[in-house]
Amino acid sequence: MRERLDQARSEAAELASLEESLGVEATPAVAPAEAAPEPEAPAAPAPEPEAPAEAPSLRARIATHLDALLKEVDLDEMNMKSLRKKVAADLSIEIAGEDKDWFKEHVTKRVQARAEPDEEEEDPRHPLISEDMSAVVGVSRANHFRLVKLLWKYIKAHDLQNPSNRNEILCDEKLKKVFKRDKVTGFGMSKLLGQHIFKDGEATKPKAPKKKKKQREPSDDEESDEQPKKKKKSYPKPAAQYKGSAALAEFAGVETNNRFTLSKIFWAHIKANNLQSDPSNKRIIVCDDKLKALFGVERFEMFQLAKHIKKHFEGGEE
Image 1 (tube, rainbow, N blue to C red):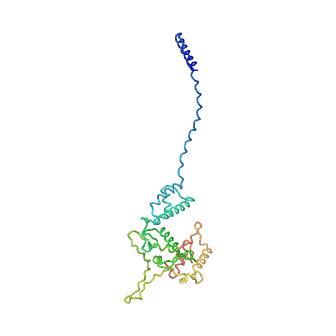
Image 2 (cartoon, rainbow, N blue to C red):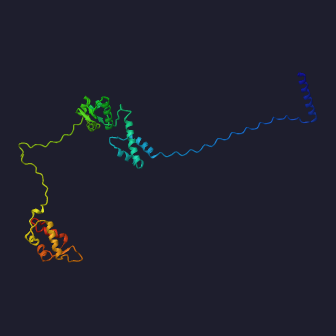
Image 3 (cartoon, rainbow, N blue to C red):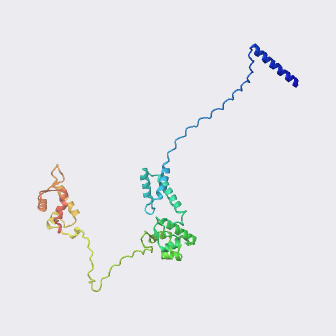
């Protein structure tokens, strides 16, 4: 085998030298066929452009602003309505209808959430409370809302609600010192808390309820019979107390002080004698001899009749 291989090599060498001597180019070796290019993978689709971020909704704006506002304001000095107006003014919006109801519910939840977790911590913005109240709730500062919450926690923990009336609280020794009574209602308790809340710098003893001022009794040296007299209101005397003149009674044919009756008699005389003789103005009464003698004028307006009648009553002159 090796001999054949060596022989083939020698023959190839001789052939190569012969071709070189004859000037024949050596046969180029055939290059191996190139492998077909693999098909390219399809290009990934271009990413779709991101949609622009939507503007926050009205309620989202309100909630964001409200959360920041609740950290700054004192809820003892601002009620729900004023808080809503401030938020609306700050954001230049109107809060009405369903948004108004949502706002109230949202504020309530936020306030409750703010009061819940830190019951052991005191807010330095809250007012001071009395020593007796502090002994019950365990803090020295609390606003009205938090104080009610802590009191109810104490009441329920010590089972102080009346079993037959859950709205009635049966005071233990600590609560008796605070409220000065044996029992109190839930609503009445809330009204009494103002006596135990103070601003910084004020005394922390419970405020005494205001006493009504007693009228000073006159001493023996003073004249007790001279009491200040109340001014009586003056009312005009009724017509029944006046007496008509003789001339008026003669004209009317009856003695009466009833102005309405006299007016009817005068108007009957005016109509019967056609004394509204000015066709351009029926309000003018042109007096005949009887009316001239009675009233002392040539003519008068119909609205002045009562004034002329009044002059014929005692005390009727103005």
